[in-house]
Amino acid sequence: MLNFGRALQLGFGIVMVYVLIACGARGNDSYGLSWQIGLIALGALAIVLAARRGCGALEKRLGRCKSPQAAADRVFIIMAAVMFAIQLYCGYKLTLAPITDLGYTDRAARQLAENWDISRIYETMPARHDKYFAIYPNNQILLLLLTGIYKIQYALTGSMNRSAPIFVNALALNISYIYMYRSAKLMYKNKQGGAAKALFAAICGAGSSVFYTYVPFYYTDSLSMPFVMAAFYRYLRGLPYLKGEVKRENLLRALPQMALCALYMALGFKMKGSVIVLLPAFMLYTAIAESEERRRGVRRLAKGAWAAVLAALVIGFIAAASIFTAAFNIADEQDYARYKFPPHHWIMMGMKTRGGYSYRDFQYTLNYETYEEKEAADVTRSAERLENFGFGGMVFHFFKKAAYTWSDGSYLIFYHINSGESSALREFVTSSKVFRYMCTLYHFAMLTAVTAGYFAGCDECRGEKKKVDESWLMRIIFAGVLVFFELWETRSRYLVNFAPIFIMLVADFCNHDGLRFVRKKEKATNKEEAAV
Image 1 (cartoon, rainbow, N blue to C red):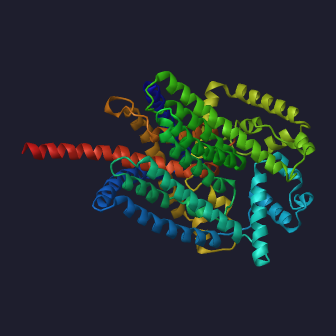
Image 2 (tube, one colour; image 1 turned 120 degrees about the vertical axis):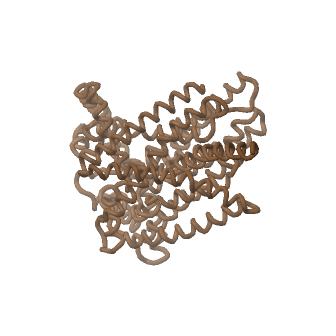
Image 3 (cartoon, rainbow, N blue to C red; image 1 turned 180 degrees about the vertical axis):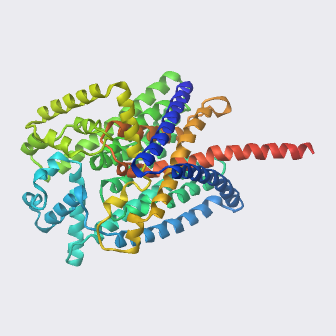
């Protein structure tokens, strides 16, 4: 298993090098960058090296405190509070009339909140989206959420405006940040300098533009983020009991955590389909994680059973959520029969040029009358595109798709909040090269650290480092996200809900592998001093 893990991490390390090269090529081809790419690469590397040193300094600093964890918690509370204030400021200064999918759903929610007449929710939509919520059922949860928010706001204030959903979105992003810190605390709980490691992850998170610029854009990308992080946290909470001996006490303690994990995954999936990436990641990690159970047969049976239980719980909660949304009759059976798109539509769409949204592909699928006809047509077009690509063309397609997905450090926010009342902050976010370069440096420092983390993970599969820990889990999730968007319709915005896990991966590399290097130097220095 460790040899397999080593090969897998080496493979994804090489793939990440491929992604970095693809992003550089896109910078040259689409933005006309040349020597700037070299400066960005050097800047990203410098940031990673500085972060490694900074993490070591933070560990030493907190090590002088009587209670490092209490000190770290106090600092984090202040950081989270300040962040929330900045988030609210950004949200209200960057507020706008949303466009495209968020605009359609937001206007429908206001209409529904006024009179609860489902038949009127399409009055404000363009003709091509006459049955929008049958085509995109994942936005039904968002519709109900926004309707509830507007209902409450109207009951309290007598009016409906975007301040309420912006506040909820700021809360969702801040809760995600808190879950990120709590998850890091669990991961490093029993490790040397654990308090500093968790706090360092929070510091890295505080520097990410996603937590601020996405506040006014209250769409499924950010609103699904707390479900991703809550599921991740609950899985970590249940993990010690999964790793323990197979006995009744551990089973009873693990089950509630796994049930909550499955519930959050299901709710997140109903809002954003990519959240399902967590399920195979958790199942795989459950299968390979170390266990205290000495009976080999029992250990294997227990791991398989827990993976199956988790999958069954997720499927059950998804079914329950579907029944809940169906009760509102947002779309009836006739609507689904005529307009519902098969999942293969988004795979087919993802096989065109750079893999982003295509109105022609949307219209192509919509023109077929039944669900079965749509599915057959999408499979046929996918096969045609695959045949036209050939092996070399497919490799180049994945190259372009990786670049389109991973090259934008702002996650395309400048496009989504471009309209709205003019302000210095909006001008800075949407038009300033300084902001774009800041986001790009942060983003490529993150990708560099993740890439280095995969190669460093190979070292954990041999010698004294033979250990499968939570770093593996995060790398599995990252790999799952990478593969998912190489197959699915994509754009950089779709990465937003997984951003905290990406940030934790960066922090993990800096405060785990980086500190190991520091400790080797310290150990060598101590030996020299002892010899003298």
